[in-house]
Image 1 (cartoon, rainbow, N blue to C red):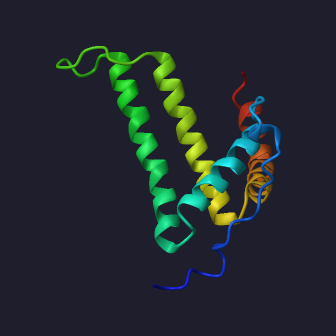
Image 2: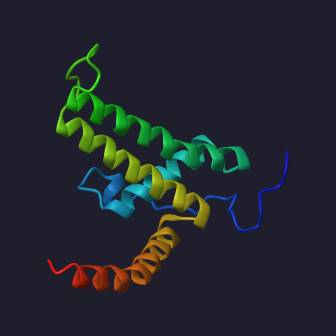
Length: 137
């Protein structure tokens, strides 16, 4: 077995099980990601293979979203209308969740992933504002 690169944490970061997300109250996005990461790390410790599988899960979920869209629009005449907007919305949520779990796997934990995402959004935001101003909306 090869040693993972130093930039990919191989040890899960402990997460409190007394968080509101663990006790059944309404979860926050990042609380949910932290719990999912803790559960995945317990079931499948972080190895090169597991990291790759978590990245591939994002593509799998994208495929499910595409299938739901095809089913919602009835694009496949053999199958007809098989999905609803709610089905598609759920699949898109699964895409976002799997992407954030993959990000948290690569960065070490949900808090660090949130920090990375916030920094990324901060870098992109000025350009988006400029594009919107130039669009004359």
